[in-house]
Image (cartoon, rainbow, N blue to C red; front, side, top):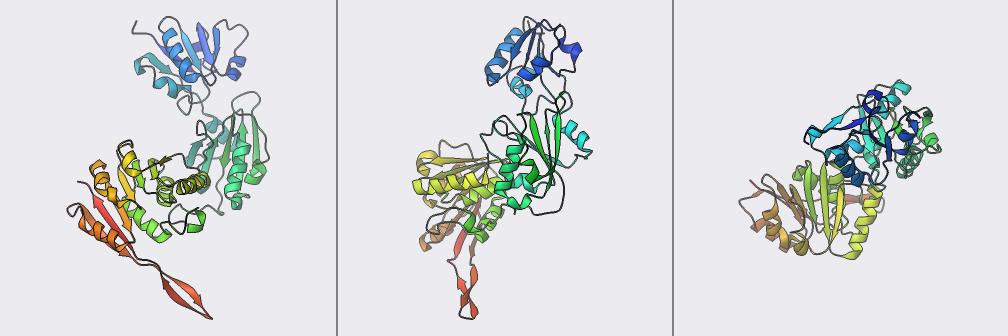
Length: 390
């Protein structure tokens, strides 16, 4: 039977589900069905992946409707089913999204809104991107309802406490609620799991861009960190774009973390073998709360074949693996390596001549106190080599 259809609809699409033999939905939606609905009711919980397979199989024999609120393709059951069911066997009836209903309540245009969700993110909250957005919408989940999200954002950046904000809960349902005030006010609001936080536009303090952040922000060992000025240059030479980046010999992880923060579509693989530095990377990742940064513990040579093919590579330590890393690079990709030792600089100047597009030295001097005056204090010069694969 090839002409079967599995339908996804909202509770408002009565014409779709009223004759269904099977209706699957979350507990709250099932409770909204009228008493005269005789369909078999199946609750969707944490078993969504397994249940989706079962529903697809049953739809071959009987009418099955999956109920969802808003747009089921935005972190909803629709996305799960799209990976399982052939598109020709799937029909989706979208409804108003919760954020559309919320903005109507707020009388707030939303064409400039940036959408975020913590669903399935294991607590990850990209707070810099959220707070730097002119207008941000953050969908909560059972473990992180909107009030909790507001409190977490405040903890990361207390200066945003007076920013106008709002919380909407159970939008589109009879017990809908809306709260408005400041972000600090929202941190005290308690709601159920179906909630979202909106940060409204207003000039005020925002977190700095994750580019050349001060060394003091990062945990690091014995000053073994790529310093801000060099970090900014390296990131510009990598020509970041969505894809995969390797950060080999990560040290503190500062370069990879800033790359991940600047380019959300980029997945960064941080490779480091020294356990004390790995702990620093974990602490730094916990502070930045990025979902597109993955730590791999071990020797570069042992792990390099296990990593996905990279679009760009940074080598801050372990230039002995430069040639092998370059072989793995995608065509058109870039590899940037740095060195402070004379021997490392000489090696960078001697390898891959035909692919090296830049070789430069960065010298940074900082003003430091000398009695009542100041003098220039030079840091170690850094050699930066840039290679590009045709």
